[in-house]
Image (cartoon, rainbow, N blue to C red; front, top):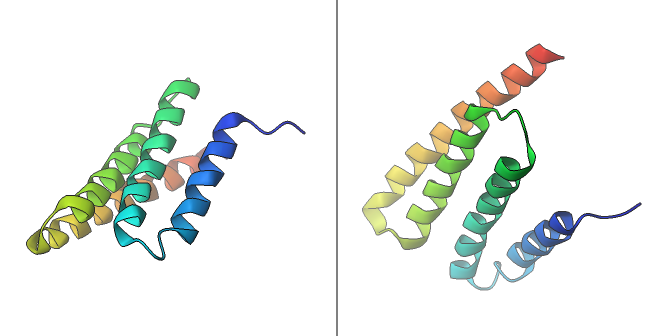
Length: 101
């Protein structure tokens, strides 16, 4: 079984976020955006028929991570709004996927 380069890259990012992010919170926030950004880029490049709710949900998650990483204390509420949008949009992705089965 051959493992694709993206899978290796993504696993390295996840492991770095788990082990290094526990000790360096700034690094953890940076890697959160990197994980979402890499998923979004891979999806746009590789998937022919794209689900727009999936793309929008990943963009909302990335915006929320960026706000948490670089925002001030009052912007945490805005970050929660974008995480909420991510969850609602992702629920639409799941619903459309289940309805196609």
